[in-house]
Image (cartoon, rainbow, N blue to C red; front, top):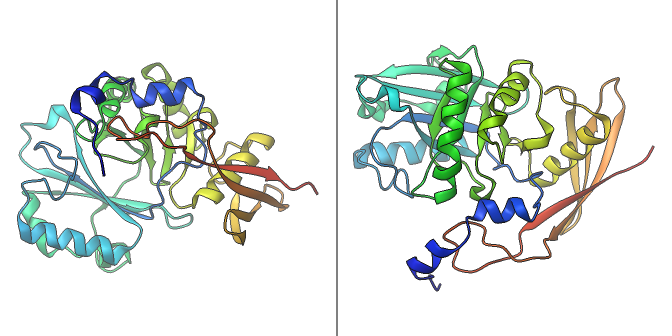
Length: 308
């Protein structure tokens, strides 16, 4: 694979600015994840966060095995600048599937203390994984080594959210997916992805989170859903003005051909709504990240609600 010269990449427009200017849809772009491990790591964040870290080979191997055991799982490194001199490290682990949303936290003296920790067993209900997290948890991608847009857009957004909350709700994180949609925020325990969040949007987003609502203008999707289901959910919410997190209950989906699906949700009042979703490619090639060697046409999922 050819790689563009560094000077050429640096001289290119920011991928997030190009995506925003072209009005690339945000819907149906959230990463598909059910289980999460958020580990406070204060060293430098390499593009390969685990492989490039200074964790021991034994701990790296253990974490990789635990992620495989959990299935649809992601490890994020998190940090807060104000905790640089704090002695202990924070760990969060949780699940974000509908009906199973739960997060736990615990402090450890050192990351290496996790070499014998069974994350999969803890999240299956065996033992006590830690203290339940009773408030929403937001992570803001600030992973500049992964993509310069994440640092440029993420760090001011993190600062704005911290000013607005003054609490432990918000952390900086490594790559969450979708660099060109920076500033990116993921809200736990539900695994709600938001993109193109500006510092001035911080208060509105936090108000929606506190009220158990979804900010549809910036909503990318829910990590528990596949892309076609995310597209269907977004379309139904927009048409019917449904912003409550629990307003729609996913009932199932069926593939009708390689690039088409029918998705069913139960709406408030019990009505079953069906949505047809088709995968397409955007008309204009774009750089999917700031370091992409070649532009490509981004995939899109177009939803059409079936009329009753």
